[in-house]
Image (cartoon, rainbow over all chains, first blue to last red):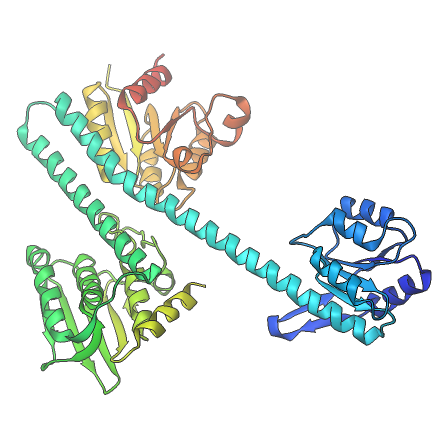
Length: 382
Length: 129
């Protein structure tokens, strides 16, 4: 804090009142203390501010050379420094023009140490809240930038793989055996399919995140949707002799956007097939009570360690180890599932054991107001 | 004379397969490794004439780690680093100055996607003699 006043008594008084006190700002969980510096003229104050901007400027209106308002005119409105103007008693006019010129607050002379502290506390709260908001915005930008960078990388890798094969096929670099080229074209198709899945997942994610997607809430039967998800995964499961089974019977109704529940089920069931072993099993158990619906998908796959499960729900976190090396995934599926579960006032749990298998359990609330749900997701992000 | 052997270290199986085709067509023998562990194993089994290393594998810095290990044991073994990092982050580094060679332990650095003609040219330059 910089105190600017031509009366030595005032400078010392303020320095003494604030020098060894601190403020506990309980609302924002911060403790603040000030270092007090002083100046006896406006000219000297400006010099000091230019050298190093204080957080709070306590500025007397009546100064020998340039006035307090002149100083305020020079420093203007700053995001990082709050000015409190000291005015003569009952000089409301000066106070008003000070505020108009960018001062944050004013103190009328004479004031007690406790009045001073109240004003300073308020200023400190404002300063710190603004600072926290700026830092949050900065972090958000950083996260977004990082996300875009990773998306670019994830999209470029399959593109590079396809280009590389096409070049070889065009130049016939691999000899005369047609089967070699057929295999390369198959790999191109696999990589482009993966790229398409990534784009679809990205769109799902941005729709959920923006909260702008038009959600069509209606009564949906989760069991019917699970049947569809299992049918969708059936070709891949059959190719590797994996048994897929749904347990439980009777309709399970909830208010939901059918498309969103499909995304949850498709992600869980296709993961359970993808990360399974050949000849394994996938069991989908559906249940619920009056308020909630539970979807549990168990596989007999590669499983994960505790450390791996803790990282699982992040974006583009793909658990990379010897067992997952040749499995392609967008790295977004579970992040999407978690966001959707939050949207339905629920959660996702995972239990897993390496080389034994994993169970993913999603609990969804049967009734949730759409506006509440969107707020929940946004809070979650902040 | 036996064909020169090139060790290709990359976690993308398609990139390894493509490099194998391209390098075999150019008369090289190719050994593949999909990460740090396999690369160590391959190096323990015999000295290649050159190593091509992708910078990012399972862990962000596995490529760097491998390059350092290779150069610490066998400074004369040429290493070509391929990377998508430069294009994505705007970080530009190459191995043309002594200062950079001191910390990037590689003899050449190529951006991904790799132009195979350029890679073959670099390999030709580094394994001759």
